[in-house]
Image 1 (cartoon, rainbow, N blue to C red):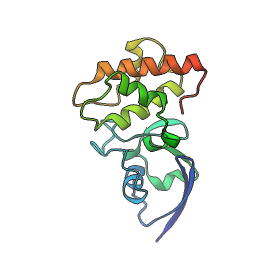
Image 2: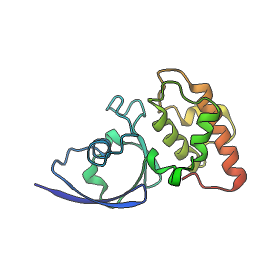
Image 3: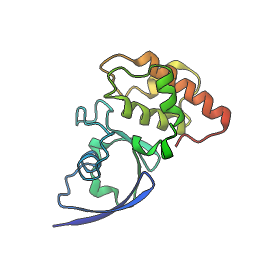
Amino acid sequence: MRIPITLTVNGSARAIELDDPRVTLLDLLRERLDLTGTKKGCDRGQCGACTVLLDGRRVNACLALAVSLDGAEIVTVEGLAPEGRLHPVQAAFIAHDGFQCGFCTPGQIMSAVGLIREGQAGSDPERVREGMSGNLCRCGAYAGITEAVLAAQAEMTGRGEDAA
């Protein structure tokens, strides 16, 4: 049994036929669409490595069934840098050493973009840490991550930019 769905992924319409209704968005992105920036960490929704934007909201792609997303708009880390220009959050992660090994970085960046877009970042480091608490970093780069989110938030607000 084939189940047809249509998604907009990083701005491109994609018609997909699922052969299993149990396929997660994470597996669809990585295995069928070759978007491997979204990482498979715990595969249980506990680490945030698979965070993407689904219709503008942060979600753990490992917990979302692809079959339930017909018509949805998905943005992955690959969709943040059109034409090679880094998104302000990506640039801030580099400038503030917001990563060490880099495994969690795509999920951290997508969560930060969502946090800023939702208007929840503010200028308080504690607020940012709370808003990013669903994303774990095994290396402990939390200080740089928090600084990066605050810097990107300030820069984007100063320019009147939307986060995504």
